[in-house]
Length: 97
Image (cartoon, rainbow, N blue to C red; front, side, top):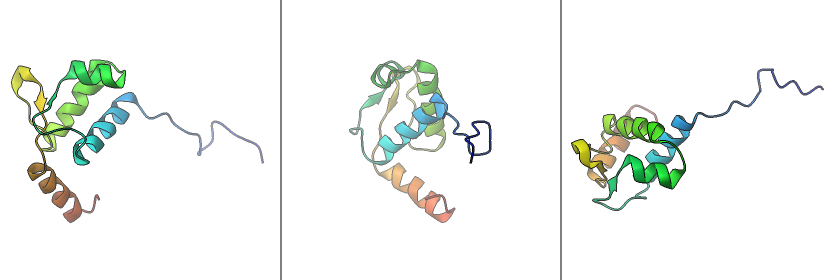
């Protein structure tokens, strides 16, 4: 059997924005941040070695999901379990967990 890199099983690279979002979401849901930690674009971009754009997109998506909350120009403080548990319950009800 010949290896066909353009066939249906060709591996596709996961975009940086998607990897960044999944990583940050995983850290939020697993308690990888301390309560009150400020999640700033600059710090996270430096930590992950990516530009601020995928960080910004991921933080806004997490905010829309209710996992973090924006404080205007002060970043996104990490808030623990209350909101996260609500999100997990929502995902269980809708079959996404």
